[in-house]
Length: 178
Image (cartoon, rainbow, N blue to C red; front, side, top):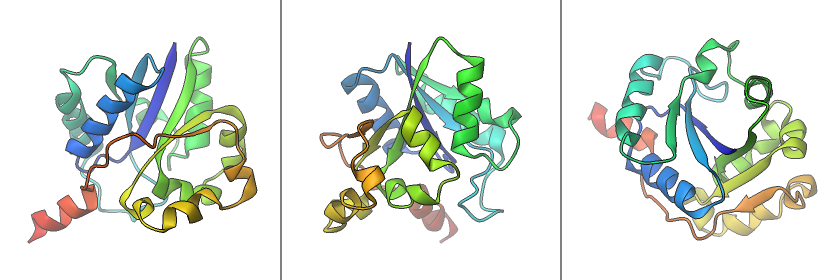
């Protein structure tokens, strides 16, 4: 089976996450898309996350009626912080019969070379990249013309026809504090 891994804090999960996940499962060759709830993100400040079990339950509730989508707590039992390369290795070991594809936003592609063992990910996994607000502007060409090893990677697929959802968890948290 072809499994997409859409990882994130989902703090909180929102219609943008769900809409994109639904689009990906309906418009790509993936058999399933796992929304992998990260217990903690090494690139985000500590202390801003709701409890992991609450975030997982919220994701389950948000996608329960959408075929092909699955909420996953796979990272909950892995060493922390959660590095994508380690997660992908553990997934391959636990599910050798599956082919995994990483799903990330263009904002993450900008900082992809800061990810731990990004070369390993780039070499061993297909990566679907969806548009993000930061990439809609003039930065789009800058993102795509960055470091040659990323720009020329054969396994990166830009999901240019994916819808753009003008929402972020950061914005939602900020509006809830007001």
